[in-house]
Length: 324
Image (cartoon, rainbow, N blue to C red):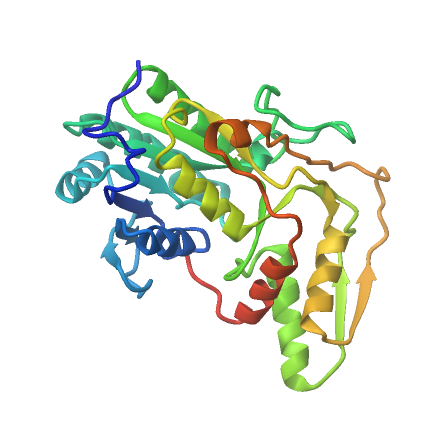
């Protein structure tokens, strides 16, 4: 059974009321902007009130600490058609903190939405790290049995399963977008590209040649542009076949971390010496390439051809990191 909203969400002529959890962060902020640009009524929930942009109301709520009753009360007051969970994270967090902002938050959100008097679509942003590692040249489809190899992937998988089960039971109108490694403006400072961008910017300001001493960069990952992720969220908010689904959002291309670092260096135009540590383990132990066919079928979504524009925007915004 699928929970029915009070009106068809695919009715594009009617603005939706959308609540974005983590709406001032790396993913949440551009999602809020895009929704507001489409004419929807948008409320961003975040620990601290920060300006997001025209058409977006920001309301303070510590999502890591808020209990079910508090979340329920806020959602009853806002009466949304759609809730987007762009909160959570991994960079710079302990395992306990990751549990709080990922698993506990999602469990409480599900319970809160289930208490509401009508159906609300919940869009959970999952992670490619739920899959773990697969043999080289494998395309990871949604049918693949997840086997995460890091705590963050395990926690996000628990969230995905909780949303899927609650949707199956008819408690929520839920869909999970399993997102690749995102590149774009406001890149978290603890991430590889965030660290590289900061070092390049420091060297540029000092008028010096940059020197980057990094761990081995041979891992192959599915990198996806921030704007593509935002587009997928907007589609998931209205597409009638989205509920109950887990949908990959990636580029369908495996690229090395080395290629991404080099692209950032090229975009920055900062003279740089890149020193990569020698690999001590197997020649290649990390491979991710997502099959994005389901996203095309269910959402009518497809990724961009390259990441140059996203990397340029990352560079232009380096030094102005957006807090989660």
